[in-house]
Length: 106
Image 1 (cartoon, rainbow, N blue to C red):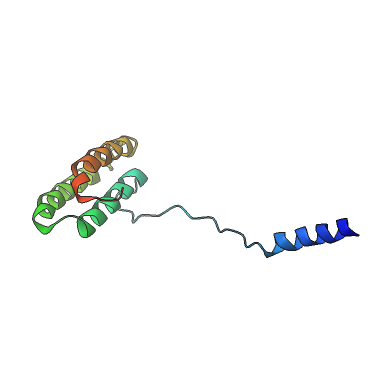
Image 2: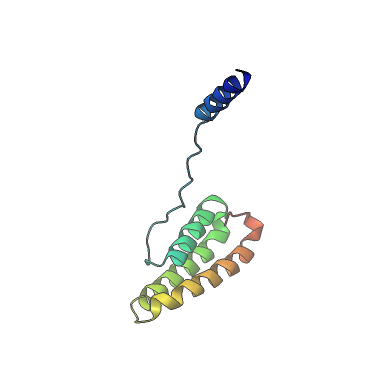
């Protein structure tokens, strides 16, 4: 009898434990259609908006806009998409280092 009571209690405990929902991977607005680049652009823009002082923001924003213009040209080339992913990963690493003092979240 005691075993049945323990088993029933264990089943009841399992039923009462709510399932932990899976956290979906973050999605980023598509600027180029290259996931690594879209992620980089979104995170950099968020960094600029939330952490970078106005005077420092201007040159960084101009640099990002210029990079996006160039990447938009490159994405139209036959092998552009395959080359942009690694290029954006490198840009992310460089930007992380350059914005350390602003405490951006990458």
